[in-house]
Length: 374
DNA sequence: TTCTAAATAT
DNA sequence: AATATTTAGA
Image (cartoon, rainbow, N blue to C red; front, side, top):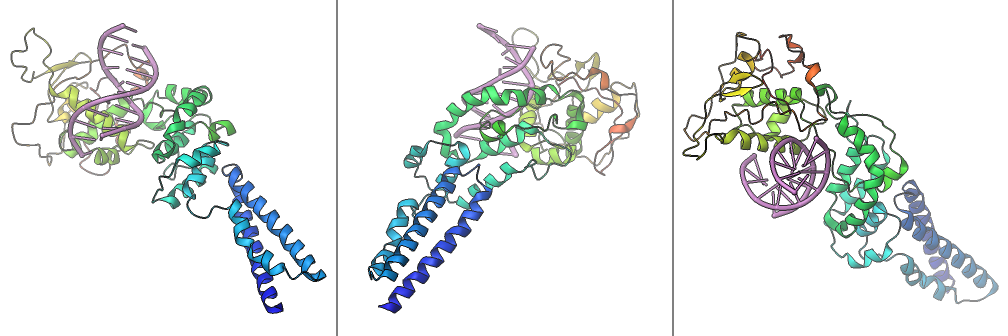
C-alpha cells in the first residue's frame, strides 16, 4: 500500500514537473498560444491542487490517495486532449485569439505538424526572413508566412483579410509605393515598425506588389540573355542571376510569364491578323529594337548608339524555328500604368556600368537600357 | 468601366 | 516550371 502510494506520488510529482517545464516553454509563445498556455496553466494548477490535497488526505490517513493519483490521467485529459491537436491548436492560436470551436472542425491532420509549429517562431522575430539581409519588408514578410501556411484556416481568411485590409494597409502601402528606383532596394524596405496588431492578425493580405522598375527589368533582361533567352531561362536561374535581394521566384516567374506572353505574338497591328508572324522590330522608347534572341542587341545597341556590344557569344539560342521571336516591346513606354514605379530619373545610363552585377559570366557590357518601363 | 501587371492557384 | 485564374491599381 505504502509502496503504491509512494509510487503514485512520485508519478504525480514528475508529471507536475513536466507540466511546469512545458509551461515555461509555452510561456515564450504566450502571445501566439494563449489558449495553449492557459490550458497548461490550468492543468498545472489543478494537478498541484490535487496533489496537495491528496497528500494531505493521505497523511491524515485517507488511503484513497492511490485512487486519486491514478485519476491523474483522466483529470488531465480534460485539459489536455492528447490525441490530435498539435497543429490545429497551434494554428488556431496563431491565427487569432479565440475561435476555439474552429478546432473542432478541422481534423485535417497535417503531416507537417512540426513545421507548422516552427513556423510560428518567426513571427516573433523581427526579421523572420532568413534570407533577408538588407531587405526587410515589414508587412510583406509576415504576410508571406501566413499565406503559405497550410490551408487549414481558409475559413477564416476572409474574416481576417477584412480585418487586415484596414490594419495592414498601412504597412503595405509604403512598401508598394517605395518601388521607385530600383534594384538597390529590391524590396521596398521602409518602416520596420510592425505594430503588434499587424504582426498578430494581419497576414492574410495579399503580398505587396513588386514593382518592376526599369532597372529591375533591365536586370531581368540581362539575366535572360545570359541564360539563353526567355524560353530556356528558368525563373529560378533568372532570379539568381539577377541577384536582387528580396526577389522571389514567384515574382520572377510571373514576370517571365508576362514577358513571354507579350513577347510572343506581337502583331497586333494591321486589321486581320493574317498571319501575325513576328514583326521584326519594334520601337521601344523611340528606339528600334531588334527582336531578341539576342536581347543583348537590345540592350547593348539600343540607346547608346552603337555601343560596341561585346557580348558573350557563348550563348546558344534555341535553334529551332519554334522559337517565336520575342520581338515585342511587349510594352512600350507606357506612360500610364505603374505610377508607382517611376524611375525615369534614376536611370543612369551613360554607359557607366555601375550596374553590372551580373555574376561573373561573360559580363555583358550592356551599356544602356533599352528596356521599357516596367 | 476596362485593361493590365502582378499575385496566386492549378 | 508552365499555365490559368484572380486581384487590384490606374
